[in-house]
Image (cartoon, rainbow, N blue to C red; front, side, top):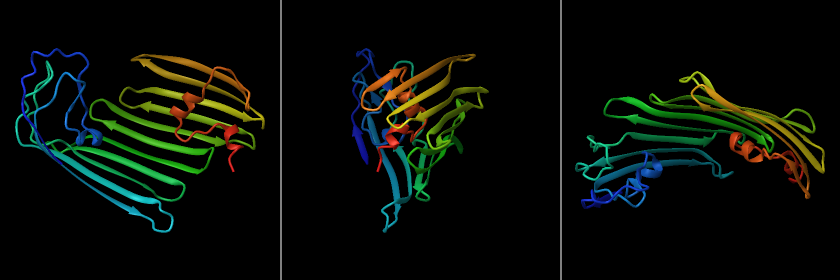
Length: 250
């Protein structure tokens, strides 16, 4: 897509709630690189992207999707935020995304941001998930951003017996040499009721962390007693399902 926007002097307009968007696929095709109403960029640019998909005819599963994209600038940047230097390059980093359903149970994803001018990796994300059935999920992830992020992330929900389920998450930063989030819990499904307990540790500052304990009794169709851990579990363990919901599934 091609975008042209004329330059307008906006220095007299104060900055209240405007910031510059990080470069990503979501931002690649936006007309304005700023979020907020205090700045509108000037533009003379072309964005090129290519996507290919391989879809299995019998099942309809998307076995593979690959996307590449880059933006090219044909003029210098004139509109900036206070204290932010204008760009000096005529092209953005190259973005590459790939994902797919390897089997019915395994799915993978990866993304890569590459600086074509200096030939170095800016960021990369690699992940996979294994979900053979509801209530059985394993997630593996690795995130890297140049000079700021180098993390591994593993989480799971898995049945330990007929009625007991275990959940955990381990998110560790190699760059900071510390645990970002650790989570462990047990859940028992009593049929018409369920009980769950979760312990969570979160890094809050460079050398500090905070601990939380969640304990909840749920009576199906009647209500819940205790501190609710469900939002924490759904956010920390992708694919998590409460055990009493699994009993209701066909």
